[in-house]
Length: 393
Image 1: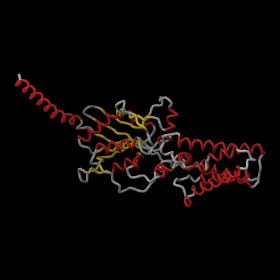
Image 2: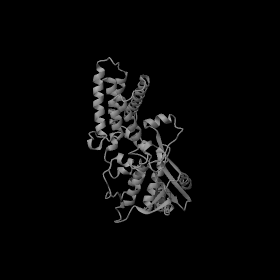
Image 3: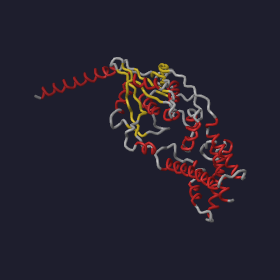
Image 4: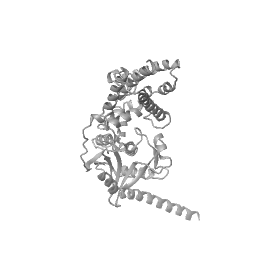
């Protein structure tokens, strides 16, 4: 009996060894002709698409599959969608789609798509496929989106780093740019979008980004992949080939200065100067309504900035020094009785904050650790004139 059990154990061990030896090559063989590539999609015209997009393509001719894994999707049917989106709590989802369907969408919106085929061996290919399959599990598909640190581009960068140990990023072409500098490259030709984003994002956007961190923008990830090396094989590049799948000429048109925030607030500054020096005075009731409209809008801006700072999980909107000119003190000053002796003290304090803000919006006089849009200088001057007119006259 003992001899029988010994023989059976030997047979089982041999069988297990046989399966291990022959199963691994079979798994690699199934992915031998598999091609993995990074897709970089050009910026679109809508606000959510102006920075471009990345996805990863897995082409397996032997299995007859051609799939695109996309980390940039979310469900509009999510309960409390708007509130979660505003607060930075909206879960983003890894989705997978047929390559043809994915490409058709970008063809429809006339957005160029570039493909970079990665130079991978069978082991690296299998590791990336296994990683994506694991991410597609229901408990792993969602993640907490962060515009600078965790998005559709950085997720692909992380996949490369975690599954291609020999990959090294080249920093030869690195230049000193802040996160704000980088996103401004994609906001050219959109003066109101550029102005609004500068108002809502705070000091974290003005930190210099490392070469690796710059890959939060799809185009920057594409450049990083193009320059990356595989340390295990001297001279070998991560990018095996590159081709333009869709090509559209999306040249931006000229900007009408009359439709920019510079013109609008410049015109309002001229109007405030007219009121300040009594060159012309409308009816008292009309002027009061105009002043109340101004202060009401500033109050809304102030509350929105404070909410985005303290009431959300958005890192870029923290530490927003714009609350110095869009100050809650303006709300206090607005509701204070004109006879209140502290109203003038509050006025002096607000004027001081507005002066600092005006200086910070001028490139050569910047004193705060945050970039202010130049229009802030115009708005600050308007508010200074308005407070002096309404408090000291």
